[in-house]
Image 1 (cartoon, rainbow, N blue to C red):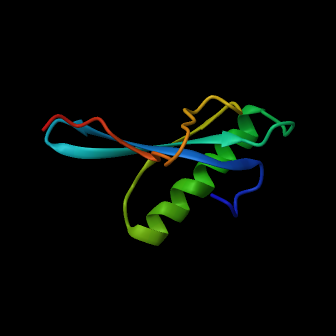
Image 2 (tube, one colour):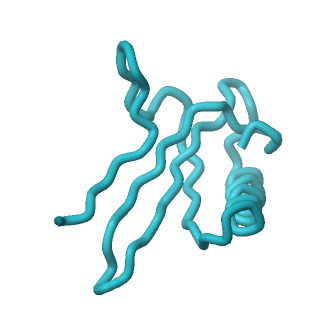
Length: 86
């Protein structure tokens, strides 16, 4: 994500289950003050999804969100939220 223009280093990975399969969604914030147009967001999301697929072989949905919308915590950062039922 750090190599993708227009996005900030703030991201969150959400793990869910669709039927019997696990699913990964990556939420990443845009840089404050950068263009928030749909085309820029789609290009950034596509680049990140390709990098994830090329890097670890997993297909992920990527959503680019507004700055300061992802949860921040004091202390240890929780970048992965596992929302799958046990």
